Length: 372
Image (cartoon, rainbow, N blue to C red; front, side, top):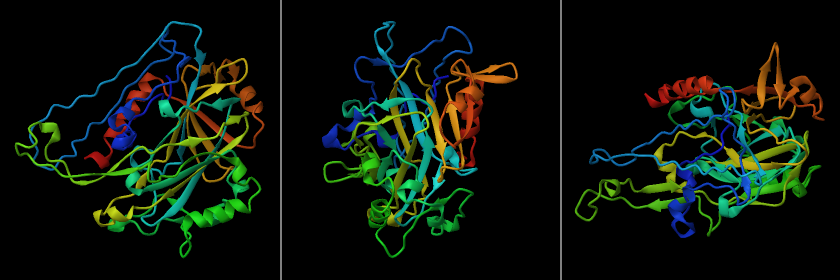
């Protein structure tokens, strides 16, 4: 399977003046395409899964829900092949949809990983590339660095367990944040990076909302009066809702073995503090990359830890990582040979999901007590 090639959430849409619902359309730049071979059962496949939630005030009039999917494909062989990468934060065990609990107050967290091939990040604001997914009521900013966290001054001793969750919710095994109480967290981060080995020269991408790049937008309440004759427009909850913002990037090339670190600032926004929001965060940096060299790198999804000496779990295309007797081939090469060619002390764990495993995973996720 092709791991996580597209994703669309409530925070995919833009503020009205920046395109609104048009931002739901994620595309690849002209002349680029994702290789796909479905000729055999163990080759590529596409799995579509979605959850439609009625956020209108109860009771609301009956409404038909639908999800429209469009995929453009071509048999042309002159397209430049690209691969997808979804860089997640390490999830806590038992949290729904691979989330991590963050603090209610402003705090920082980060995740790190290692590139497993040579390439460059494809940057195209017109196509919303790259894109950053987070639950925006308690997300504030993101910075992506081409460096290890330790080389940015971000060390494990800064971390503490989340200690201010609502309803006496207890943190799980990986629910840590850096909350520099008594100090502005952005200034604390700047001070750390200013004095670090990698410094701000290693910054590659950032999402820092400003007046023209909102990540929250106020939507006023509606009712079921004649003023709103259609069901989809009735009984809206007046509230602040997620918007995409925009990820800005410098050119970003990488070699296999290079490290990256994604830093995020989280914390419930002042205008929503009275809503008792449970802060389970995703922090997923979604991008596509062009491989450099004779082979096309895998599509992959990675759950990165806080430090560069922890094991990093990669989910890769099931057409790239294949069983071979008692061993595995990774892109046609024995996996041990592949790992030995990556100049890094990172501990890798590769995994893949064939179509059967994908179906089982989705069934397990939607049976979580979060939805019961």
